[in-house]
Length: 206
Image (cartoon, rainbow, N blue to C red; front, side):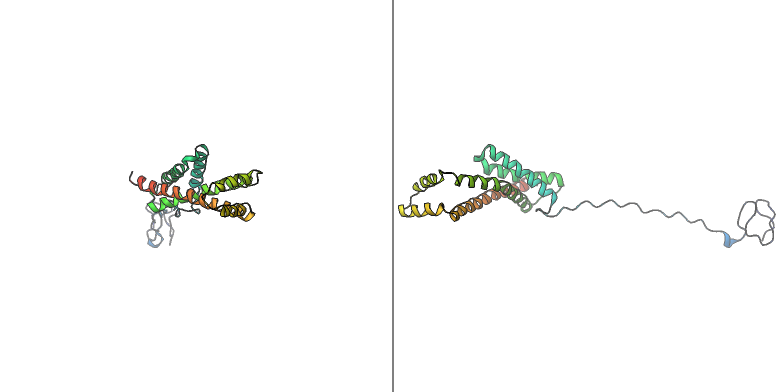
């Protein structure tokens, strides 16, 4: 062991460190300087994965609801063009979904997006239409209107009387309403489905 430290200070016997500069005097006391451990870089958050097209997909649900409202508004303006507005709603729904999500839809997924729009259109319109129908059948002149309508059918008089009698019963009125709702469901879902499938096929080429 040296009697003097490299700094010139005189060391006492068996000194492990210099009392002046603090320098270690034994090899085992020299602690190798360890490199600072590098902190792990923060990992980027994974992009949200959207579920398949359906009511459980929040983005598809919002877009379907928006396009359904648009289709209903256009139907109120010009109902004769109802199939056109419904097909356009399905097409526009696919466009909005692809734009907002950044994902291209297949023809099948586009048809699902259009069908979802059509179902919402039907749900939004079935309640007011049912109310209007019930109001109509409860009017005093409903029987006369039904008699006039049935009389124009090319059926035997006896059959016409049976039809008229059945249509004026509660069961007959409920059957008419159910038939009307089924026809509206087919109309309001078929054309948006076709529009959505067409939109997915056309927009995927852009």
